Length: 111
Length: 116
Image (cartoon, rainbow over all chains, first blue to last red; front, side, top):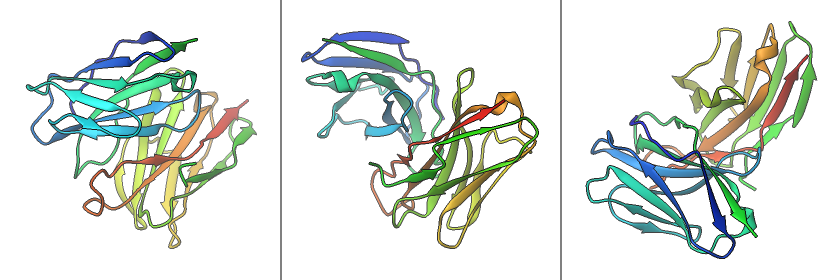
């Protein structure tokens, strides 16, 4: 699986959009970008994933650059409950199914 | 609530002992994964079972073993425990590849193991 690089921490004001970047310059053609988050010591929670097109669901939006070497997770209206560690993971959709977690970004939502 | 259950929530034991952690996957999920989260190593994949068979192995110590039973619940056995085995142990489950678009993993609440 390709390696990812994320900033260790970020702050965002409550109600504003939180934009979390991820670099994955060695991503290969069959690899998807997945985002998970972990709130305090709870089990990680799936957020969204994408291949090359931008994706949106009820939780977030995922913007992937045209060259697929980086992506941004957007939480449109951050709330205090979005304070968590966010993990960007690259892996193929089929085949090796394990998730390889990096150190993630600790996002703190400021009231 | 992810639909994945893990017992017990907390476990405190002594070095050298053996413990068993239990996981019940979401209804219909055939794959079960075990992950360990310690302060110095982060979240690490240990092992995956698919419909009763071992499918993938990660950084799992020889002192650790797992199995998946016919009813698809899984157990992680940790033996000859050391202080460094203190960690959160998560179980996750997913649907079979090809049956869902996302194949995302759903995580349980974890078992916090403390070895004294």
